[in-house]
Amino acid sequence: MGRGEPSRTSAEELLAFEVATRDLVGVALSSVEHLEVSLPQYRLLLLLHTVGRASSTQCAEALGVVGSSVTRLADRLHATGHLVRGVDPDNRSVVTLELTDAGRRVVRQVTTRRRRQLSRVLDRLDPARRAACARVLDELHRMLAETGTDAPRDRLPL
Image (cartoon, rainbow, N blue to C red; front, top):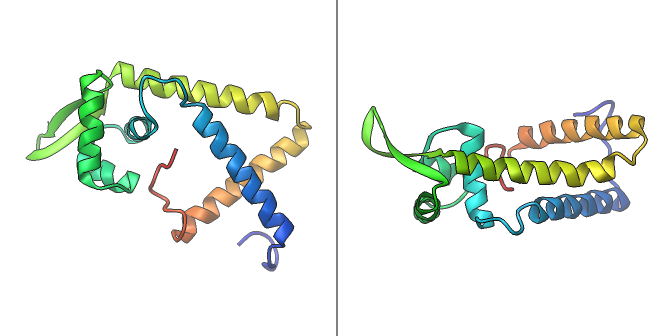
């Protein structure tokens, strides 16, 4: 747990993290505006981009939704050419989902938008402070993944 003895987080520190969380969620949301897919559809595309071909059940678990939600999302994304359905060669009753070039293009487009928006702000920070911030965020990410309580480590929210 960090360096030294853990101490209670002050209200001011918590507020700073809450504000930063809202700001980063705002960046994530604005990066998916004006796309040919909805936010829930994008989440499925991002998951498949991250894990590769996966079953509908695996996708539902990773996204924290029920299987029928993934089926509806996949129906729309298949119809627009963003993903393809297949079957598991070991179990033909298992439906698999995989990105197409169009699906990969959407994920790249969103990633580029996010990085551009973040860079505009981060480039203005002193390089040493920016590097220190990145180290703290990496540590925070690891700690949240270890707790497994309020931040499911296997889910991809945005």
